[in-house]
Figure (cartoon, one colour):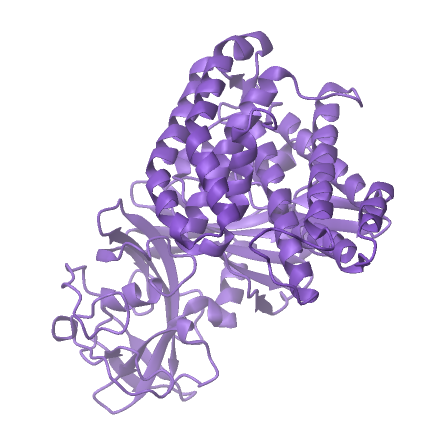
Length: 589
């Protein structure tokens, strides 16, 4: 039941009893969001009014239905099954006010945490963490609709609204204190515990209050809040049983003295009744920086392209040839990447990190996955032909004709080359690109810090923790330089007021200079990487490394192609060009 009563503040205190999951009705034509709202069953209704927040579900019956969470999830960037739809939701666990077995971290207003299992249509289930808080009154018009879950109306005629918990900064601060003071709270089916690591006491002595949290607007697969200039709290939205790789890798790298990652200060865990563990949040030291490497390199190339005189475009290439600031940072990034891999392969006694041989069957398995992904994407790519320019059509035709031959060529090369080189499988970053790197230090002597060791969000926890060739990370960074070069070209053309001519003619040779820049950054990154591994400043990858790297480049480009076809069709040309280069035996890799 929903009980509203006055307290001394006076503030409304709401006690919620959450009912078990139910199967959800089929969608109806009148629904304004993707998720169906069976209003009679769940006791709330949708309105057709157009004022802010008037389309919110209204909880009349005194219960918080699962459908409210479903509606909220489908509007979040970090929800992974938007395209599939939701068949049903089940509540795995709850931390609620009003329970005899639970006390919320924040006593100022009713708040809690729902851990829900979402069963998408024709897909395996996914679990998510949804912190929530109840505030009296109606939501403010200026607030983001994505943060509000429902309106609550009581029999006494009073109203409140249910909102996403991390938008309430007091709740975020309470989570921080739960880690800082190692608090533990029972839930319906387990407990939540905070774990502080040694660096946290040094950052904030126990007798000093923590600074106010500030949410970061750039959300991806997680939610992030900063605490002053010292720490950042990363809340993992999609949950899987086991320690999150970002936390696991951060602790391992700190234990083995790798300085180019943020220090882990603590974490918040959910421990189920069967003793299985899930990482809910991780607290890291906030690293002073001048932005991401993506922004740094994109600005570098954009400034070159924008400064090119139209009368003599060769000056852009000359500037590129004499400027060593960007290649120097690319080479240093390669060096830091190699140092990362060396540390990740340094502990033979830790079964989660001990290096293992990279066998021919591992390479064949990778190529099987590449071939299967291509089989699935080829019809989508063919359908895309009708929306492309003549040049892009030619690229598509080249890739369609040449990709099977590329896979076969890599298969033939694999057995002998892998046997000769004896490469290794290790734990890797797994989702490595320029956006996962911070530029730090002085402008005249920049360095880098590496972030976000979760791996690709769409993959399972087991797959993200699997050992593979470290060249997977190298391939990811090479593809990232390709994206930066292409986007800089588009931005430069827009700035000059030019249209992207379908015949590909560019009177100021913007694309030529961008291609030169991409090749130079890629070469510098590789030089830094392979020279560090071999202690030879002139080192280059051997034939086996080239073969393994080409396979991972193909895999990464197909991953990008899949994403662009489904989300940004105008960007399909970027991975297409990468695939075309791999398919051309005269260019290849």
